Image 1: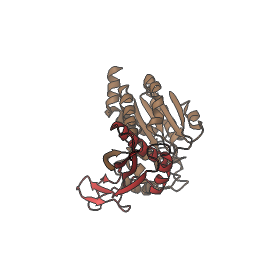
Image 2: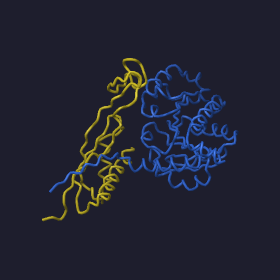
Image 3: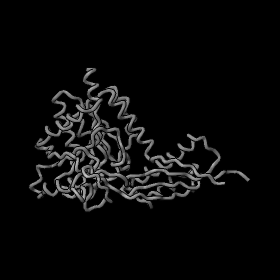
Image 4: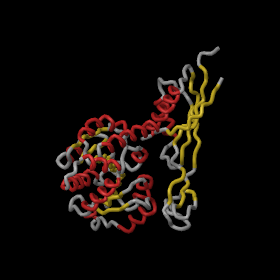
Length: 120
Length: 229
């Protein structure tokens, strides 16, 4: 259940961003996240944990929007890029060289949407 | 009126900055940090104990921070093998985070051990993404847990510099296939160094200590410490 820690990290990231930018009297209506295929996050568990992590904060009842990112590896020998697969893992399917992960571990707050509070 | 703000912040930005603080301040006093991760019961505590005995024979000081959901059993097991040990009881949290380590920093900086082992909570998933300020990651694959653990939990093994095949003295009894284990390890972690260890018979302990010393000698913090001492 590391989703509890991750949900708290999302909340802290956004609250810090609001503070850094001096944003007040605005309600966060949505948070857009980018989550890689290999980020080891269960989206349903994250949403559940998030609903508790936001209680009594400016983010209460805010919506999470998920965008995903495919896992891609690149061979350090022949530089070929290929989709990550559980058949080859981190071995190049062409030359057998060791591969590095190019994308797939992302877990970023892409953007937030704000709405003014108390304006008639 | 709605407004959109672009952030592009990694969600572990705060945790990563705490990890950087740990890494830099401990490197400044010449401490090499080693994050040890594996399944529960794969032999982390026994291996660290045997390794510490070996490292201390050469005059190096060893500190350990050990994480578990409950009890201080591991700290009690380690205490006679190390110079300093503290148990972090996570009360159910399945991994260690840098914020849990920060409170021990003043004491560690005063002690300035040559090595700080962080024995993570036994788990092959959640500890992976949390940088604890380590310079080396060590995973254990015990002969008793099945050769395909690296394929089932590729992310953890991929990020480790060294994989210890632990409980090697039991290999024959449990019909452990080293070839099969190495095949999976080679696929998921082509760059990891593999060392066979038995904490009971001490097989491979000296080799593991040497591998850690070699990394230590390459690290800036270690060199600084040698110059100063």
